[in-house]
Length: 92
Image 1 (spheres, helix red, strand yellow):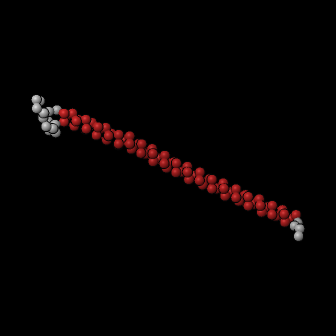
Image 2 (cartoon, helix red, strand yellow; image 1 turned 120 degrees about the vertical axis):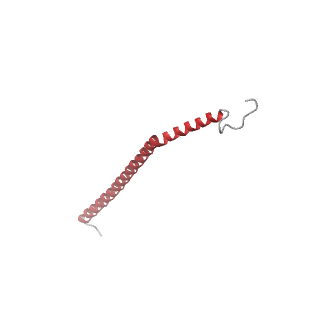
Image 3 (cartoon, rainbow, N blue to C red; image 1 turned 180 degrees about the vertical axis):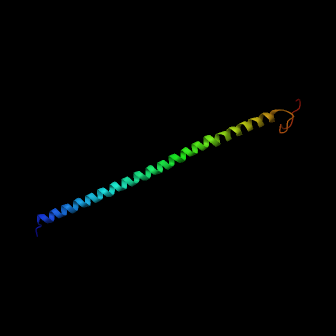
């Protein structure tokens, strides 16, 4: 059984359409992955920026205040006769 040139041309056209559909699908998958990763990267970037901003505006002054409070408490505790100074040693 032989095929006519018209059938071969039709099958070539079907093959071209299938290859084009596969190419479009792969392009669409790549485009969607790129868009979702770009969106996720933007969200992550904004979250890190917000964390850094909050750290600079709130956490850093709080840590400085804690450091100063501990230092003042330490120096007050070293002076004899103050509350929290601990027991006095003989000869002081």
